[in-house]
Image (tube, rainbow, N blue to C red; front, side):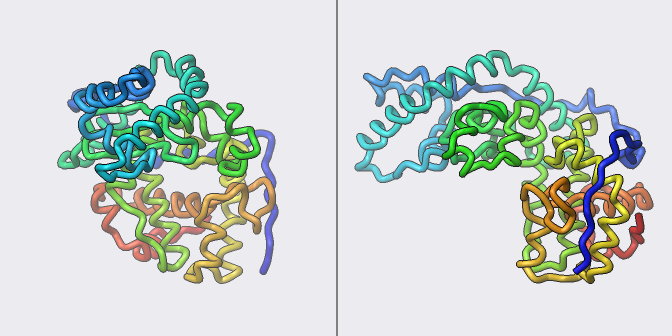
Length: 338
């Protein structure tokens, strides 16, 4: 199998990540989004009166408290285990108090996050007017191995334990690095929160059910998701949307022809073997075939370019129609040849 190696110019002119399409004015699209600091309320509970405190929390967060205890903390839901649950909650509060103290400094006033997420939801409402938007943005602190972003029945929930900055001591520990190697933990930055919130909306609108499809179809489906994210967050940096570093993204554009030639020459376009597909469609520190400077999950970049080219030829296609369009048809009609 032929191999290619990455080269990144010190300074290059990038092809725009957008199709040149005018960004719609969504300032009049009405969206209500209330910030709720569950993390503050939870860590302020009176552990000497835990039952009473939990009842107060339940009154304020009738749905989310249950999600937090039984899904995020993964505590047993049996009725006869209330004492054990209470003790585990007290233990969690004690163990994660240092992280909460650090979060208090970083997220003392997260109103900017609310505004960014709200703006993204305005675009969602503009393109998908019948989609039920979440009305709350809830911050919480969960276990380090738990969720960073959750979409509940009425809220977007953000686990601040995974947004403490890439150099946070817990991520740099041996246990932290085992859970989240550097290529993952470098994305645990505050600026990723709005993009990741909108990604959960994208995944709700367009769930990932691509297993078993040929590689090119999985690429196009991943490209659709990035294209949707583009429309919902047109001003966000492409590095945040892709998860690539700037050098990696620059390298993708500089080597776009080489990347595509590799898939064609090695007859990988229609391969469906999961052991092969995963090398290009899974998150990883790099894509082995393209060298150490390349990003992992490079298939999303290829699919993104194909979708952008196809949408450039079909400007009247709605985002709903794009979601429903057969990925093989998109590939064939795009006639992608960088």
